[in-house]
Length: 484
Ligand SMILES: NC(=O)c1ccc[n+]([C@@H]2O[C@H](COP(=O)([O-])OP(=O)(O)OC[C@H]3O[C@@H](n4cnc5c(N)ncnc54)[C@H](O)[C@@H]3O)[C@@H](O)[C@H]2O)c1
Ligand SMILES: O=S(=O)(O)c1ccc(CO)cc1
Image (cartoon, rainbow, N blue to C red):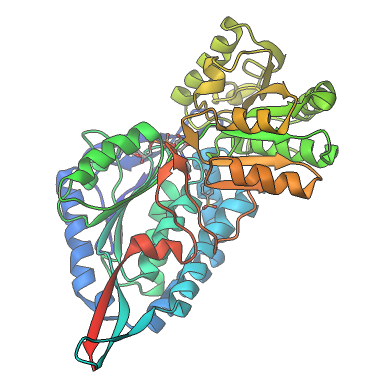
């Protein structure tokens, strides 16, 4: 049985309290996770502080960049180990994990190392009251010890998306991976040691949220800032914890994203794009679309086409050929998604396809499967249109005008992403400007350039990460003013 231990000060640390790690495909116990108590979290924060005050804190940017490139190279060298670990933890299809999760997990180190190496800082000359001159210039220092609290949907990708820039900026980190997906964060500890990242720079503490490692880390006074990806409600709790000591937070939170398909869209591309945005990763992507609005002239044709695509997604384990959809992460999440499937029916939805659990054979019958599901016919007040489900499902409603589509898209407390499909360039610009979200894709979905700002509006987040914007959170910008 695999043991997932904490990684503190460059060493793997066992504890006496463990919990089960289960495979989503068949609910089998595949590992034991060593839960960190207050003592281990404190040791991790102290190790991170010592590294900050030690070799890592004194290291030149050029050497740091070199080491982070080596981390990326080592992830790529051990690609198959990371792939196997991520697939076992999440059950996601091989094609997805091998094309998205692991390569991005590696790229996050290189991209941010290069950004930090090349970013300029500002300087201003000024006239002084005595007729002389002064020079102002900015310097960036690391924020300090960063608490990184992660979700389970893209474990390595979303963790390194924060650890990459944090380390590139010279910080040290204590990572709390999701209790559902401990594997790749633990494996990354081996990579850090292998390439010579000093002990204490990267630490991992395992456990849950409240009264466990998540709470112990976010309430720890030795943590200088907290970066978090997860549910909006959890963000509220962490924000409360961060208030003590007035520590900065960066939050990437939930979404209830709209997709808008105009009648002038390239129909086949729109159907293919919406299939991905509704069902990829079994709908467990915060940027995914759960509310689809289609202009009336193509509504019926679009519903029929998306139905055909949904029904063609073959459920199965990661390695099986032709698999298009994996299971949900956990039994608990399966129950949550199925409760929404029941609610939709109760609130009067027409179930276009899905709505239940696919029939799986043998041990797979114990997995956390649900059918890709499409509804129509619900009022905008329905629960499945208002609340984030995080499953492979969407409601499709017709609209008539551009203004109506924008109003529908914006009628939510969330503001993470929108995907718009149209061949009319003017309309694309008008809609993109008016949707209240952090990212608006036009004729695409989940195209990511890591130099761009990423984050959510409204209840979907606080702050922006990506490119130089990550520096806003991971560094303190200081001004030096010299009288000449
Ligand atoms: N905006 C984004 O970029 C983005 C990306 C991925 C996922 N998400 C969101 O994440 C959610 C799914 O992920 P999840 O279920 O893992 O989220 P979650 O909020 O339940 O858990 C995320 C992490 O927070 C920890 N945690 C929970 N309660 C805590 C507390 N009180 N104090 C400290 N830590 C605590 C968990 O143990 C876990 O590591 C969805 O809402 C999704 O939209 C957002
Ligand atoms: O900014 S990214 O790292 O590309 C990213 C990918 C997916 C999600 C949503 O789950 C959030 C951020």
